[in-house]
Length: 338
Image (cartoon, rainbow, N blue to C red):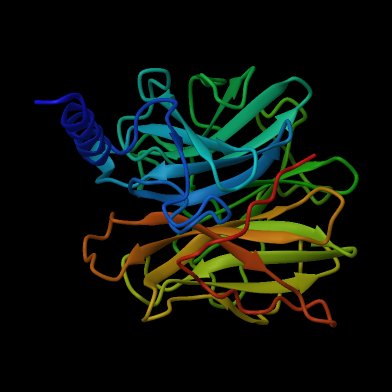
């Protein structure tokens, strides 16, 4: 074999190994379409329920590892300087460091406070809090890539309040600096005021700790952000394994509502993908520039856990209403942060 043929054989071998093992620890992955666009999905592997956020001039995505509950026992994270090139950070937390979780570690929400990073997660998929241990937990790390360690050694929310299953938590920082947890499955949504150290909750002035704010059509996956002084509350509807999974929203002057459903902003496109839902939103700091990070199911997949993480632009009209998001294969253009 001459040297040229040897190089060709070596290159072919490398391509085979890359396709056989598409996601390795700390691997950097570029868009399969172009270096100028992210492509969708934005990184390989089965991932769902993505939380998108910006830390240290990098975009971060924290998704659920989409697998049967018994195998869903760790979380990975992904970071990018420009939305196009992504680096995987493997096992930022797993059940070895959260003793009370045995299965179904999912739907992470991550915030920074001071020099610490706090990761909130669902665990064990409980249905009866009198017989099962589980709910919503919190972990802490010195770095957005972890490793995260259990903060409490027990669930932060281990009981079912207002008939809301303790899953799909989102932590929201209000304009006055107060942090709230918004969460809930089974078609119910609660909001609660977090203590400053995230070890528990402070009752509202009326003595209630968990207030229900469920809008019409709500199923799960809440998310909230502020734009031009208005509170945009978003959630997922439909069945998570079906093609009707989608995202709807409402707008209010308060994080407590009332929230009247305005319309659907994310849903399947039969030419692109089904089951588009459970999302988050990233705003470029100081800009009226918004991106929706979400999961969807490829057209040729029927397994409920075969979901991938994608990103597309989100726009507003002149009245401040969210325009329906067009799901694409291209994704978004490169957008470095300063």
